[in-house]
Each structure stands twice: as structure tokens, then as C-alpha cells.
Image 1 (cartoon, one colour):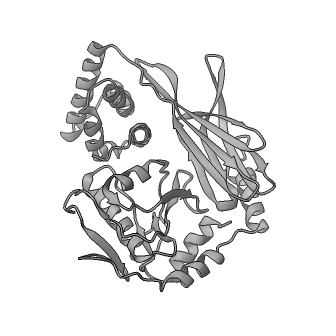
Image 2 (cartoon, one colour):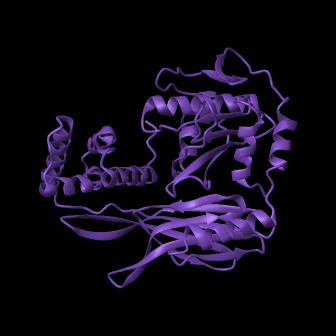
Image 3 (cartoon, helix red, strand yellow):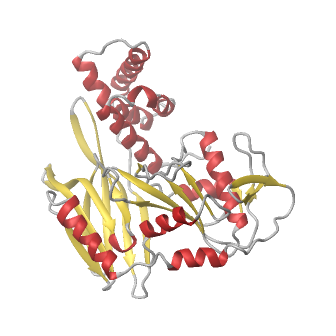
Length: 379
């Protein structure tokens, strides 16, 4: 079993970016340009490594390898984006890896690209990349080529050595459990569960009751053996259940207008642990958008537009308007879910205006995370 934190350290220590790994400060999958760049690197790394895994490390400064972190990213449907644009798409996995010196809401992202023999290419164009484009990796450079790819097997032994030196140990696991339970979450009633005498899951959250039901908020859930953060949210709430073979997380979204909030089930995530040392994660979307009075939504939508206009013009907001600003991402999301198609783009475009306002920006990130879960936009 590979300790993903150790794997990232070994990748960064190996040398500069190479034909089997790349590093990024962050991923931008909100725009067609950002999606195109990401897909180009996936295509190139896959084509350059037909017999070994290749990797993208997210949350690292390119020039000096400084670990700065990025937001928790839990969109399992990122594979759908790859499948939509690439012919012979590789299987990819995105994992969130906590590091000791990062804030609790920041992680390092690890994209693992599985090996495959067939050449990947763009079956349809996106941004400035035309259909039928093929990319490869030469050193730290991603470049287009014409025709078939010459298969390159020179990285196989190097990657295997790096992965073998990143294997987990009892010491790493015990250190991880102690750190989670006694230091990082000692004030949040942390718990742990061992599955199949091998896997250790730790979780912590603040219990809260709403309409005769108990939820956990500010939840952090980690698979300690692999140093993977399975779930993190500063706002949403979850229910946790488990038996001897499975661990299930049901995530709820708080939505409402005029200070009336209800919790709606968003996604169920079940981790199945097997005796052979493997595990599988199944995810199922449960969300059914609530319907609100359309006349009220028109009023809220226009009020949101007015607030953004004032921010653009640097007009001072009243106390009430500042409170409305905190709710703006959530109410824009409600509008979008009720047929205001332009509300999602309005929300995305508002990012630089909301960034100076801590709570509003936190709500912005949560709203986009929820929207990604519900329907990954590959258009």
C-alpha cells in the first residue's frame, strides 16, 4: 500500500518535472481554457508512459517546489471530462493528500494516470486544441506530434523504484492516527475504525441536531494508511455509518431562503474494503433540487446582480448587504437549480469580487463544489 504523502515527496525530490510527472500550482476546470490545459497534460503523460503510472502534483510552486496547497477537490466525475474529449482515455484518479504544515482546508492534489497501450488523442476540439490532436511529454515539455507515438519504456524502472520507496509502514500509520486523534482534531471528538485488519479510517466533526436528526459539520475524514483525505467540508453536513466491510458517507446540502434552511441529501459515498488488501469507492448522487417561488427568485437574482455591481464600483455595502453577500453564492446556486441558467456563470465570474470577503468566498467555493458534484460541465 502506497503512502501518497511520501510518494509526493519522492516525486518532488527525484528531479524537475519529467516525462512521467508534472506539477501545477492549481487546476482551473471552470473554464474551457483550463480544461484544455489539463486534458493536454493528461494526453501527453499517458502517451509517454505506456507501462507505468504517471502523475500530476497539484498545489506546488513550479519554480522552487514549495508546497503551498490547494483547495480540497472531490469531483470523482473528473474521469467524465477525460472520457468526453479523449479517444482511448486513460483511467485517472484524483486524491487529496494532507501535509502537516498546510492549513486544514488545504491539501496537495495527486492525479494518478494509469498506463495503457493505445495512443490517446482528442476526439473533439476544446479551446485552441483541434480534434485529432496528439500530445507527448519530452522532459518537462508537453508538445504536439503528428502521426503515431513512439512507445517509450525508459521510465518504468524509475517509477517502480519511486513507488516502492513510498510504501506504507506501521510507523507511518500509527503516527497518522495519533496526529489526527490527539493533535489536529482533539477538540472534535475524533474516532477511528479498522477494516480488514489493514485499513484505518479516522474522522472528526461537530455534532448538530436539526429537526430531530443528528448530523456532523466541519467534517474531516481520512484514510490514514494512504494519507488520503476522503472528505472535507467547512460548511456542509454528513451522516456516517459503517459495518465490518464498508464505510458510508451521506453528504447533505443546507439550502434555503430568508434564513429558513433545510438539509437535502447530495451524495452517498461508500468505501468497500476487501480481504485482498484493496478497496473500492462507489458514489451515487442523491440530490433532487428544491423548487422555490419564481417571483421571489427573480427578486433575489436581481439583488445579487446589484450587489456585484456595487462591488465592481467599489461602493460601500451596508450591514444587511454584507450579510446578503455571504449568502450570494448559495442563492445564485438555488436560482441556477430553478432554471436561471445564467446564474452559474454569474457566480463563476464573481470569484475575484468575492475573494476579499472570507465568508462569502468560502461559500463560493462550497457552491461550486456542489455544482460540480451534481453535473460535471464538459461543454
